[in-house]
Image 1 (cartoon, rainbow, N blue to C red):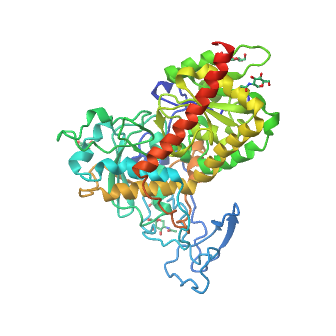
Image 2 (image 1 turned 90 degrees about the horizontal axis):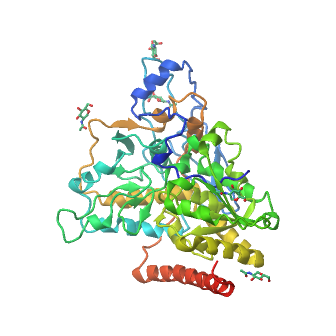
Image 3 (image 1 turned 45 degrees about the vertical axis):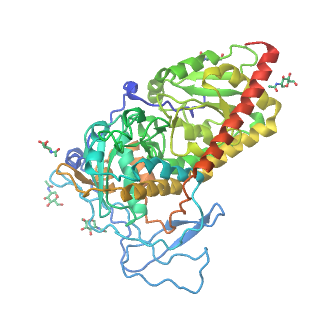
Length: 536
Ligand SMILES: *[C@@H]1O[C@H](CO)[C@@H](O)[C@H](O)[C@H]1NC(C)=O
Ligand SMILES: *[C@@H]1O[C@H](CO)[C@@H](O)[C@H](O)[C@H]1NC(C)=O
Ligand SMILES: *[C@@H]1O[C@H](CO)[C@@H](O)[C@H](O)[C@H]1NC(C)=O
Ligand SMILES: *[C@@H]1O[C@H](CO)[C@@H](O)[C@H](O)[C@H]1NC(C)=O
Ligand SMILES: *[C@@H]1O[C@H](CO)[C@@H](O)[C@H](O)[C@H]1NC(C)=O
């Protein structure tokens, strides 16, 4: 059992988790508590040398993307960049480096937020590329408030559903937490927004937002009607997934910065590992069947999937395994390395209680994904196309659809490989961490424009920064490691990608038509095949 990919959609019914989350509050009081137990003194004045500026750069992926590998010192006396050459290969002369500035903590001191965070930074490389297509949905997600804007009254209606409020004012971030979220979902969601602020100083407008950390959306369209003054416009609520019948604003989930409880690394590191993992077993040498491993108990549709475990001894086409996270945790996750997942030619994605975090890990493997048509969507799936990026499976016809897909793939290995590669290519390219930040940037910028209220820091809110979150955690555990790994060390030298225009209605129709017609084609093949063979 080497694979896992199929990270369980963790849900509230997942409370058997043994791992206790040390961060129970984002309050800075926390710092004190930790300091009492740890007498570990940070001397983290890393390389704060004065004026001398040294740097180097590497071009990665051969795509003219720059990655700063070291070290730029905060330096306000910017020397003007030479203006003679203006190519994309121009190297920025000054970069600010912002390592964690942890104070030495003891029982009487608390970690504070540095006052000298850069408030503005002009990216040296202006963008010359358009963002991936899935950015075009941002307009759609925010459209419902276009006419009215978001007033205080509108916003506050979302509060009963929110786990926390984030206030961004002058580039600083304040949190008022209402309810603790499951595991570290809230912690890493806030951490992610903090990293965005480090990446694009001065580019996030003042705003207040409310965030829901549960699995399912909460702002259902049926409860908010345009012709009713009381309920219109609907309350804006940020959430990890959307639904065609909901108004929740889709935002990247916490796992991009790590899911320490399940030993899942932050996305930057993990996506590289997954890419390497794809090379481990050649496609032809992979087990010629479909694979899924996960928790079948989180939703009826997953329970139903278990029926498809074909018991044909000699050639089981669909292999399903129940993931028991408790024993995985006890075994130190030896059996669930995501980068070892790519050993079958086909793998199944099926949503859990709502969208599943596992989706990006499953699609990243370059085996062909058999995607049981989901109801809930995360921010990147909406522009993916069946038969280009994955093979569509009907939720109400799972078993025979899966079996047919596997047989088809084994008869058409070239084509199946192409679909697998295109799906994983989409993930590797369009879901680079830089794009995830760019997506967040545009959502927040678009959202900020809608603010028709005085952005105020609530009395009980606490200023939060990377320092107050990370510095007090000195137990050498995974939470801190995920934070260190995903820490944005410098403002981006490259500007955000160019926002594509909104989908026009006819373009959206075209996209949907393309998706539907691909699904129909597969359905037709499948049905013809099974009719020929008689019903299963
Ligand atoms: C805690 O640190 C502060 C400042 O670093 C120092 O002034 C104080 O004496 C320390 N207190 C204890 C109990 O060590
Ligand atoms: C770290 O933060 C403290 C407190 O805000 C500040 O006085 C100090 O200058 C900072 N150190 C660096 C190297 O920026
Ligand atoms: C599915 O079948 C495989 C192989 O026969 C078996 O090992 C596995 O436990 C079965 N899974 C379920 C959920 O019954
Ligand atoms: C796969 O090929 C075999 C042998 O040619 C054939 O009997 C079977 O119907 C094919 N299955 C599909 C799904 O194309
Ligand atoms: C702030 O916290 C205090 C004490 O916990 C509480 O009494 C008060 O109602 C809170 N104020 C707001 C605006 O939430």
